Amino acid sequence: MLDLKLIRSEPERVRAALARRGAADRIDDLLELDRRRRELLPGIEGARSERKAASERIGEAKKQGLEADEEVARVRDLKAEIETLENELEGIEGELEVLAAALPNIPEDDAPDGMTEEDAVVVREVGAQPSFGFEPRDHIELTEPSGLIEMEQAAKTSGSRFAYLKGDLVLLELALVRWAIGLLAEAGFEPVAPPVLVREEALFGTGFLPGDRDQIYEIEKDELFLVGTAEVPLASLQAGQILEADELPIRYAGFSTCFRREAGAAGRDTRGIFRVHQFDKVEMFSFVTPDRARDEHERILAIEERMLTELGLPYRVVDVAVGDLGGSAARKFDCEAWIPSQGRYRELTSCSNTTDFQARRLGCRFRPEPGGQPEFLNTLNGTAIAVGRTIIAILENHQREDGSVAIPEVLQEAGAPATMLS
Image 1 (cartoon, rainbow, N blue to C red):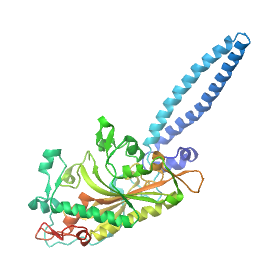
Image 2 (image 1 turned 90 degrees about the vertical axis):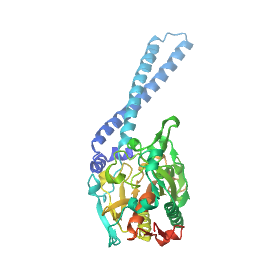
Image 3 (image 1 turned 180 degrees about the vertical axis):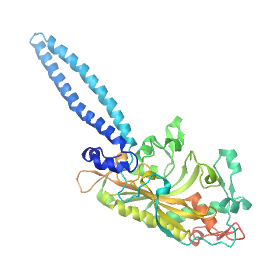
Image 4 (image 1 turned 90 degrees about the horizontal axis):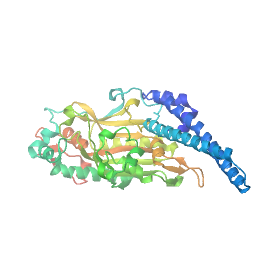
């Protein structure tokens, strides 16, 4: 949620910033609604005050045995006027709430312009792409002989784009999660196993509603939603709270199963486990003071890059264009791993600085000094391990000509086999 006071005091700056995201046209409507709202409030208070005074005069007149027909008529007229003004105010506040909720965050000045994925700017490429003396197989071709990914039976059980992982792939997943959680704990992130069913308020608070409803699984009977990322329940851990400055930063590492409809996804991405409806993920989430947000963003990105490096995966970092940020983010970096079978980089992790956008919606505040006036926190999030896609990258980059796969040493130490699919 954007700060309405900021929009009111610096409309041109906000309009110019949101124009980069294609959302500037909503500012004028919001300001007009806000102007009328601020006009109505004193009018309603004035009418209420006048009605109270007239009622007191009626009471005084009755005590003295006097007629008060004019005052009675005035009270009646004021009652009707107040009801009319209150109904208008209620309608305006409803429109204002809907419009404000639809506005995206103000992008950082350094975020690249553009509206699509192709407009992202490559920051750096790290690691050499593997050079095979054979035609590299994709993850389905690699696992098919051993039956470690079962798609057909999963489709019968749950529908398309679900999968069973079996055997050594399960050990690989558990090793990935255990290794990631351990690394993050050493970096100051508290491990959390959050609920994956949340109320609407949690999704609204993180900016996934109202805009992304078609991507979210909803359980209407219970008024609950399945999360598409642990970011949602992790953000709600501090919802409605006022923290002291010395409690910050607060960092969480959440492990959860995630669910996404992936509406509209088609083509090669739907083969295998690259884009499925259910997947596991380790997510980083930070609550920091506003002056530390940019440094924290770089810190989260550095952790993501360290993980990719230790897994021996060639990757590149891209600075996501403003039109492709998602509503909550002011800036986002993606880490894309090289996928040999596709001959291109694909997103494995991302990290976003959402400034105070989510904190305003969730009511997350802190006191800069004891007894001081509370201010809104800044929140940041980043993927540590998206299990399915990371498995794909490991299998394809570390494959051998005989169809076996050499597993990175850090995962062997966490319980994965040294070699798979041999």
